[in-house]
Length: 500
Image (tube, rainbow, N blue to C red; front, side, top):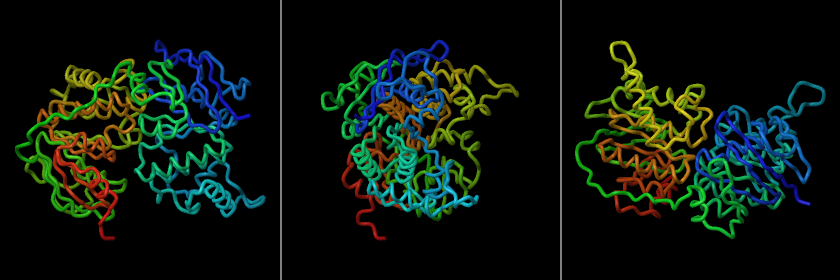
């Protein structure tokens, strides 16, 4: 008999908010069960109940027909359940084997010394089992995002897990790494591993999952074999309505460049980059991960002074290392690619997280203009359709997608002139993506210059007035709307025709 988990009649409330209402959810060994829904639909809450992070108010969890108690995360581990979160929890200074055995290291006999050779051997045995070629002795800091994802999965498998929950596992992966992950998942299914796969990407869901369950507002509104439903049905179930597709409006771009970058170089990151962004223009940089675009954006925003070349903003040369506070004062905004590490302050409220960049500007005669702050906060929550019980709610209790919307929305201020966006829709559902695309276009229509980094080629083509392709820190080609050549852009990103 195959292992299975049944969650029956699960209910969970947070104060007056009903987060889960009478949920029935089943996962069977050897299958991928996709769990989807808009941000705040209850997906993460349900998985946190399964993982022992939250306690359910009602219901029962059964393994193979027998009720089990999952009161704390260690109970989930004993039941063979592991969770791999969107933001990985590896220690960069340790090796692959060191991370996998962290907390249960093997010792040399009765000595306090680690048996590194045996740990590496066992890790390699697991890697070989799934046809993977990672070096167990390699420091994790030298791995790319896809390889780090694999280390997390191998760690779960070596703790005897038969059920693995993956939360947006491809959000930080290149196309090549996605293909490698999907092949790994297929091999895990063949070995009898069950996977709960949380994602917003329809092609992934229908390419890898046998079952799809859709949640909306804390209840399940669809649960079906993927072979018997469609992307359109799933999206309709997620939103409760037919999704209105974003259509890029045609507009004429004119006027001066608000940003000019000339011959910018930083060793090991980017080399001899020149670009400009005009007022009202959306310029998108794209490439594979490691192309150098995030480092470039951070130099523009004043977070890095270790570069050569010239950055000009509003026709004035910027001083290296001037600091982000000066950039904010001068009408720049930045959304970083990692919201949890450097995009939010978890212990503060939604209001404080939105207002933080504007406190200096909101001071009048030594007193904060509360009315201006409240206006910024109200507009930000409304314009991005952020789901929160109130502006006073601590941001750490929001879903991942709603945290991302806050990181974006805090810059929707009347003084904004240049917005730098690093993966602005990472971890965002289809409905929220359409909202954010429209806001980006509205800002551009208002005359804000926008520089975006995106690794999703369809998003790049959908948003951009101009596209700059990059490969290993170097600029490859430039394309202007509507003359976007998708196949050639992908070739640029992969380094096809580049000398090495």
